[in-house]
Structure formats: C-alpha cells, structure tokens
Length: 452
View 1 (spheres, rainbow, N blue to C red):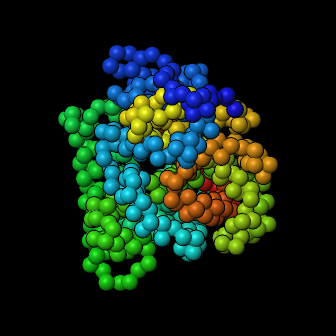
View 2: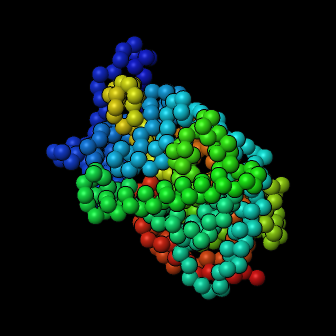
View 3: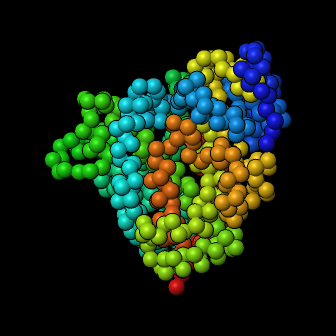
C-alpha cells in the first residue's frame, strides 16, 4: 500500500497545502485529457500520490487513490462530504431520489425503502429471477448471434420490474433502454458536449431534455395506473405510495422509480455481460463453474438453499465486478474544509473515488488486469483492505440493493451457463464508455451454443 501522510490531527496542525496535480490549459484545465483518454489521465494522476487535484468542466476534483483514505471519505468522515449529482452534466435526473438526496431527506427515504430490501423479501424474488433467466435462454436459437449487453438488459429489467414494482413492462422495455442510453451518452466523457451546460441550445441538449421529459411522463403514468388499481400488493411501488403525503412527496416517488428503473437493472446487466464475456475466453474458470453447477444444481435453477454452495460462481462474479465495476467511480463534495492525506481540500471542491482504478492496483492484486476468480480465497479476502474492493460503494451510503443484486447474479449466471456456451465474437479487451456506468463502447457480441 502506498504510504500516506499522517493526519493533521496527529501532527497537531491543520494542513494548509492543497493536493498536487498536473497543470492544465487555461479555462479547460484537464478536460481534454479526460476526454482523450481517462485511463492515461489516471495513470498520470497516480504519479502525484494518493490524493491528487485536477480540473475538468470548470470543477476542481481531488482523486483519492488509497483505500485507507477511501474509507475516510466514505465511512469515517462521511458527514464531511455530500453527494455530488454531477452538476449540470447530470441534468438533475432523479435529484429527489435516494441516490442523490442528503441529510434528513435521505434518512427518511432510506427508512421507507429499506423495508423493500429485507432478506425475507429478497429471498421471495428468487423464483422469478431464475424462471425469467431460463425463459430468456429458451428464446435464443442455437448458433444465434446476440448482443449480450442488450439481452441481459432486457432480462434484468424484467426481473426488477416484476420484483420491485409488480409490473410487466416488457412492451415498454425500449423506452427504458432509450432512457438508459440517453443518460449514459449525456455523461460520457468521450463526448465533449457532456461538459456543455444544458441551457446551451445544442441539438444534443434539446434531445436529452425531450427524452428525459418523456421518460418521466412514462414513470408518472405507471404511478397513476397503480393509484387507480385497488388490488392489494406488496412491492416497492405500493410501499412508496403508502407513504405519499406522510414522508414522501409525489416528486420523490417519481424519482425513486426513475432511479431504480435505471440503476437497478443497468448495473446488474453489465455485471452479467462482463462475467460471461470473461468466462467465454477463460476455459479454466469456466470449467470450474461447469463442475460446480453439475454437482450442486444438476441442470436446475438455483434454489435459495443452494446459493451458498455456489462458491466458484461467487468468485467469478466478484472477479468480474473487480475488473469491470458497473458503478466505476463515486463522487462527493466537501461541505467544509477537510483534511485528506495530509492535504487541505477546500469546501465545495469535489472528491472522486475511482473503483475502476483502485480495483486494478498492483499493491493489492497480483496480475491485476487478469481475470482470475481463484484469487478470491478466504485468506486473500481477510488480508485485503475493505476499500481496495468496493463495487457497491461503502459507508452509510452503500448500495441499498447490494443483496438483491448478488442474489440475482448468483441465480441468473448459473441458470444461463448450464444451458448455453458463448463464443465471443467481440474484442475480449473492449473499449469502455465512461458515462453514468461503465459500459462497453460497442456491443459485446457472442454466438450462442446450446448445451446438451
């Protein structure tokens, strides 16, 4: 682990020096560096130490590259930092939802929503997760070429809509997919227009506003349909509506649904895509999964009782999340002057916590760029810093859907892999689109081979 400077408290003084970092162009700062090659920029940033300053899009960022300091930001001193909604880049989407709210409002929302994510409720979703996965595979023809990312997006959206909202929105899947692309395109650092304020009347900005407004209208229509339905239900949407006017506003309910419809399916679909992509070109780990699935499942859909026995499956999922974390960077904003790694981060400046970079540091992982599920032994995890691997975030604001997502991944992946093999047709080392999530820049295309 890189050595960090002692805290200002330990030295008996408050730091006055701000973090070092690369110089940039007038007005633009490091915006062009971020646009041209984010990975190269981070490699340069790391040469300055564990807390590094750069500027982009008119904002001051302080990147945290050491797990001990990540823990300080997300856990120990979490109250010194607020969530940052990417300013105008984010377009205000879901601003009243759980991911972006703060303080008492966030606590109130979390108390309501966490009732939908108790272990008993999550376990009840297991049958639908497996059944929908089996139906998706059944619809593929032997020898068919498919885009894994699109196929898994449809599947995980179907699972989420049924499990959390008791909705069948298969016919509207295209609406959600278009919204997902819109949000990612808006935030993609490969597009310089991502840094252009939304009030600038560019065609791209006008198109973004239209699509967001259309999606919000779609969500509001779903809510109105539920209000008009007297059927008694036990799902997240009904739970939200039960608290309307008594803890939640109409806008908060809409933004919760917007948040979960986007993030709740997109992140899991990407995790499945990357896991299958990696397994398609790594016969050793794939064979270990074959043996485990044959021994534990014998061709069946995993039951809740069998999930703990799928240890090799869980290791493959963890390794995919390490190499390709769908939520690849977290943003915070200092709400007062803070000490971080011996430096002063001024109030109002942004703090960036990049999973995609820390997950691949040689200080913590041998052959960090290699897909190697066998590294996840009990001894390895015991020695690994908690914040050297944090695909679901950390601290009080860790992902509320973490257990739901892991159950879904451990159910869907074996269900799919027992029925088909994938011949990877795309580059096994893909380029990425770094938008709201870490997406493949091009579709991950495979040929389906049905198994006997």
